[in-house]
Each structure stands twice: as structure tokens, then as C-alpha cells.
Length: 271
Image (cartoon, rainbow, N blue to C red):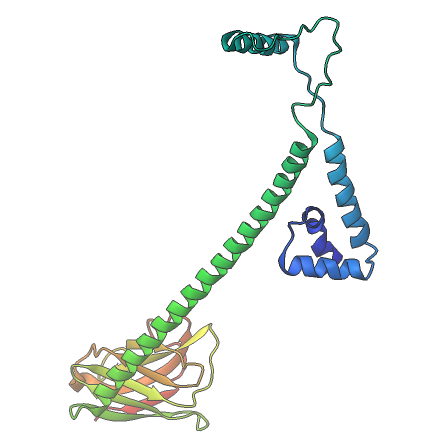
């Protein structure tokens, strides 16, 4: 820790309440006669001494003295003639002590410093608690994403293994691109799988279309390859299978398009 980091702890060290790594770091600085920390701690000790010496004197009023003496006389009269209360005449008044002794001011100063230390500790703990809650939220989100992916993989496997599914191979227009596999089921939907897909920017997405025998293409789903370049999804079939002429995939702006805006990148004819 630097001298700037340790400066707020000089007073706590001077009072003997500093603990933990801050105390160890500060003592290490003092052991090597740090030109900043050494006078800083000395100044803190001087301040505490000054607080001790700065205790103001508070004298009891004449009225308060009279009440005390009346109470003493009353107690003596009730107890009997054991001892007479001496008269205050011609006697030198005793030395009056302060109503707020020096130790009380030192204790107040120490309490103020300890309170500041406690507030800092609470702030640190609150910051750690906030960070822990953030990490827990992230872990929950990651766990939910994993559960969603497992559920999607299970649905893809069910469509792929169903004897009622029609397997299709969407061939890429760019020979350097991998093939996309599709499994068209009349009720469970269409499953899409692919491996070794190139990464995509957040400004673009892949979009699956049903190309009818007549009319305009119908959007089925938008999707991105994951970090490993894999695709696995199931989308509902929103067109009778006997009306589907082909499946096609285009690259579209993020969020998808109502109709294809780029040439078809992958396509498979539906017999």
C-alpha cells in the first residue's frame, strides 16, 4: 500500500485500534522511516495529546454549591449529632475540578475515530456484498442459459430421431462454408444443426425461411452460431409441408427482416 492509501489510518494507529493488513503495512512503512508516514503518525499522536490538554474547565455555580451543602447539612441532622458540619467561612475553597475531565475528551476523540473506522468497514462490506450479489446474479443467468441450451438440445434430438422427420441438407452457396442440416417434422417443428460456422457480428443475424411453391418466403427463425461455431435450434412449422418448396438461410440485419434482403446463403429443396 502507498502512503496515500495509509494516510487515513494514522489516527487509528495512534490510538491503537488499527488492525489487519493496514496496521501491518503502516508498521512496515514506519520501520523503514518512511518520510511521509513517520511524521504523519507523529502528528496524529500530537493531535490526540492536544485533545487531552484542550479540555475546558467547567466550574460549579454558587447555586449548585449551596444546594450540595444544604443536602449535606440535612443528611447530618437526620443522622444525629455525630459530627458537626464545618462552616465554610474563612476557609479556602477547594480546588474545583472540571466537569469534563481530560480522559473524557480523549475517549470522545477515540470514539469519533473508531466510528469513522467502523463506517469505512461497513462501506467495504457493503461493496463486497454488492459484488457478491452481482456474481450470484451472473451465475444464475449462466445456469439458466445452460438449462435452456440443454432443453433445446433435447428437442433437437427428438426431432432428429423421429421417423416422421424429413432430413434435409442445406448446401452453402460459398463452398468454404459448412453444410447446414435440417429435419422437418409436421408437428414438432423444424430442427437446424450446424458445426464450424464462422462467427458473426452483433449487427447481423442468420434467418431461416420457408420458400413456398408460390408466393413470398415466410420467416421461420433468426439465429446466431454460438462461441464454438455450432447451431442447434427448433422452430415451429408455420406452413403445410406440402406447400414448402425449399428451406433457405440468408444473412440479415440484427433482429431479422420481413423479407430476404441478401442472396440466399444456404438452400435445400423439399421434395
